[in-house]
Image (cartoon, rainbow, N blue to C red; front, side, top):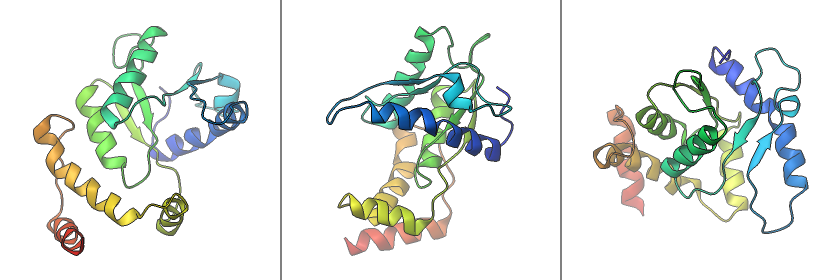
Length: 178
């Protein structure tokens, strides 16, 4: 609850990585595991770090499922999202190109929470390279995000977003090339 801005949120997200790294090193290939990062590995002694543990949910197949599965995990631990005595501030850590839609989904599903966007610090070129290593092209994913921002509010999946006309025009040009 003490995280006050995006910069602090990004620092906090980076601080959880030691716990994540240690957890992944204990896994065997093909294993799925839910991580509860102990406070000492989550905060690494930083002021404003989380109280208690940091939760990573990995069983969902889409953003809405991820938000609700995480909310259930927290509720099971007695820390419901947005309620009195519960969690009032939470970080959203997602790729930069997904950040806006994830934020709109979180704000729709849990409006009583103050959501702080803390995307990993990567460049566009680093994102392109990361997806290329997986055999994926980032271009269609970016275009798909615009389509989701445009279509998902009517389906009740996220809040509506203003999409600048030049962004919609770029999306249409990308789609026309496919």
